[in-house]
Every structure is written in structure tokens, then in C-alpha cells.
Amino acid sequence: MNEAMVIELGRRAVGAVLLAAAPMMLSGLVVGLLVSIFQAATQINEQTMTFAPKIVAVLVALLIAAPWILNIVIGLASEVFESLIVV
Image (cartoon, rainbow, N blue to C red; front, side):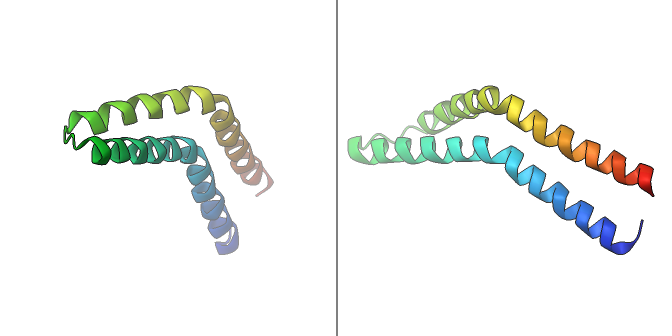
């Protein structure tokens, strides 16, 4: 493996991590925004109200996106193994 292959592999790995984490991050962001708007409108400042819905939203997003995330990870792993075999 030369430098270019290692850099390309690192770039693909970072891209795969960002794609795999995106559904959970976006759902947490949306739910957090909605909860903070609700808290601002009702002037309720309960700290547990911010964490519980985010945790549930992230878990639901993980369950829904799990097959897609698995395809991304398997695709990256197969590319890595194929590049190791070629070298």
C-alpha cells in the first residue's frame, strides 16, 4: 500500500462513518429543536425533558436505519479486503 491508497481508504472510512451516524444525529437534532421550542413556549425548564425524547429518537432512528448502515459498513469492509488482496 502506498500513501495515496491509505489516504483514499481513510477518506472513505470517514465518509462511511459520517453517513452511518447521520440518521441518528439528524433525529437527535430535530427532536432537540422541537423540545427546546416547546420548553421556550411553555417556560418549562426540566432537564430530563431534553434527554429522554432524544434518546428515544436516536434509538428509533438506529432501528430504522440499521439495514442501511450495515450495507455501508459491509461495502467499506469489502472494499478494504479487496484492496488488501490486490496489493
